[in-house]
Image 1 (cartoon, rainbow, N blue to C red):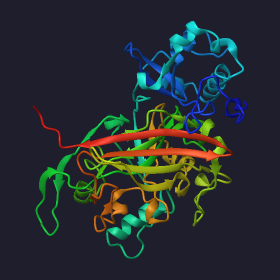
Image 2 (cartoon, rainbow, N blue to C red):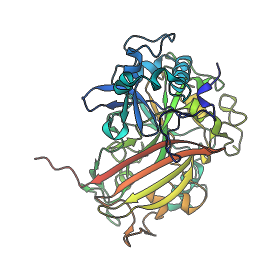
Image 3 (cartoon, rainbow, N blue to C red):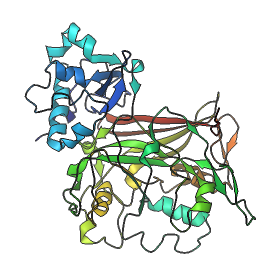
Image 4 (cartoon, one colour):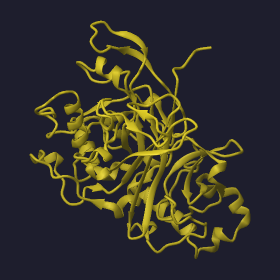
Length: 427
């Protein structure tokens, strides 16, 4: 089935700013709360949020097999469960409805009042009920930098790293949408030069620049997914800030890896960008040496050219762009991550989320965490207001942005923005 929604010459009868992340060729999916306190599944074109529940009730999806309440829910899980054919049919239909040449909704003022909202008048929600969350460690530059900062002078990567996508299971209950602030976590740390740990606020709160992909129901327990089929089970992508308390992580990670240092908060952007929308931006990933096992081997353009940007905004201060990176630097692709995840028969369900791992580029200006940007705190970075940062201060807002661009077309993710607050105090 062709992806007609991606027609590069298509224009919408809705006004779309030239610099918008959300032209009619994007058509992301999300969940929002209206001014009338109605929660609905929606999409976005330009600066307009579109109520897909209202569109369905008014029969604009006639001819597409959908359950009666498909878009009148507070998550996208059921829609995602319907599979790739339904996703593409719905996205193509939305593009047709909002095409400048289609008068059906364009000239129906009554229906438009029910269906279309200004984006500033809605409140974005978490788009899916996330049952399980896995976070990978799949960027070679980041993994190598971490090893070097920690003093590993030779073989900064463990011997397994080039053979499989390393990962750990995270905590889905603390995943939040953009705009929800995060409190500085409390925990155990081992002060430098001491032998006894202390308990208190983390002094080294960090961000990690990541993306994440959302899956549909992929397999039954015991079944693996062939590498040639895994993309059929990836619905789309979001930006992700995997908040990290580095000092807690250092103390707790031996022998089983991160725990409280990472499960206090993970922020994601609210609009899921479909793999169909990203199709025009395919590119080749890094050369893999040694060659992976056959169950992980991919050919051709197996990743995506997604520009990524990190900004820090101090409280009452000006923004500073501290890093620019790109998703194409990932050593292990999403397809390889999902193929490996199911290689032992692990079940993957609709709404599961898989974090990419920190995305760092080859230069200091493209590193994806403060731990790397300040080289473990040894080289503070200067912000535009003259202040310096080794890690994130209370009151700082961290903003990630991401977009793809070629042939004059820009498809973006919007942003994931989150402010760090002091430790939570019970009243």
